[in-house]
Image (cartoon, rainbow, N blue to C red):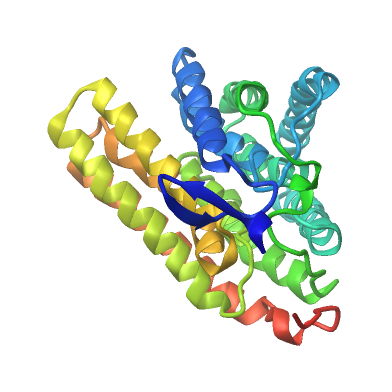
Length: 345
């Protein structure tokens, strides 16, 4: 259809209706969240802020209104504080704590399966599996973590609003532009994903592990990646593309050195992935899944300050987490073609 084509420097490039300029808009939001996050004393905000910005800028997501910009961060702070308080109170009752976290995680996945992925459930899921275990393992760290997550959400929402203000969405159909949503199996998908994620959460809780927060963030991110007809292949491709881009470009930034160069390379990486997302299809899904993985691994590449051994360990932990989640999703995901509600084109 002619409406699905836009001219780009004399050639035609396919862009889904409602995703025009999504690449630039996504890059603006992520970079804005990064720059603002770097102004805080807590370095966690500089990492989580851009990740939350990616969630807020999911393909087809409408801009947040002024009311949400005020109420959203307050709600996030209250939720974080509640999770931290309950987790610290149940720190000696691991079974009860894990049951409550699992019940909440299941509801997040169930809402995604029935109504489609939502930025709200994405944020809530990350908060549950990070603030909960961390608060139970180290109550003294809970306050800093709640503050970091709350400010990260505020920074992400503000960055997303800025990106939408600079480059408004052209079409009202943007909310339906990414890809037709196919409801998932009401129990198999959510239960399976909950089991996969809770195995990692349980490991953090039972061992009292209070570092390597990126493991839980990575797991939650990969579990929410969009499905494709070939689930395993799509997830592997997304993580391979995002990881390879981050490692290569991050390594280049380390060699060349210089904050401006690092920021430019990072922005270029996000922009290219965002432009691929605009076209939709299999490539768009792969690029959509690759963005968060690219941000996490790029940060791990350019930010390490504790030696090469620690850096290698972090990269191996992230790779192992991705592999674990991918293999788990192979078992629990229902291929779209076999889903009862799926419609043939």
